[in-house]
Image 1: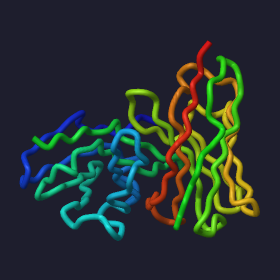
Image 2 (image 1 turned 90 degrees about the vertical axis):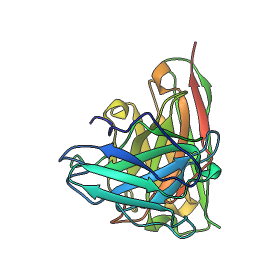
Image 3 (image 1 turned 30 degrees about the vertical axis):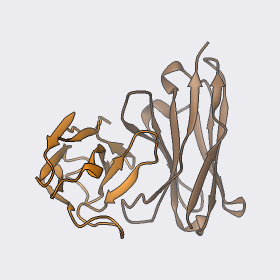
Length: 110
Length: 119
């Protein structure tokens, strides 16, 4: 099972919006609405920011949103803030009954 | 407060074994799928294995099959990862996570335990 494909890095200025894509196949992202996204600051535990494609856990900023079209999921962060700078990972369930993560995207707030 | 606390990491020689433990508190362990996720130095997250609420089903990433075994003891509020035949490429921080049934909501993670495989 191959990892999902994410851009290695994205950047934006404070106040701007960015979108991180996560591309899979018809055997993972395209097969289920079991896509989640995690924010990871180095040295800390990853934090869930979106689950089941577009749901936000309580306490997560409404500046963060998720979506999916076909085999590609996306995470959008609007009104960028310095605290958003982190690594972001997508994850999906697969038809093999295992889970797979994306390679991760480093978000830089300029 | 939900807490997951990993332990058991350390330095081991190639071919050696380690048993990781995850102590759960603040929630009913038997209601959740439990997983291990790892991150090798400088690399991304990799899902390793998971186990169903009652321990009746287990799934593994291909690289863990045959060498790793995930188990749980709901009465002891604990989840384990037995790792045999360790290789240098198994060097990573190993995280314990929980996920509710029928959802991708992996909402709690431990702080991780470092496994270093080196001669």
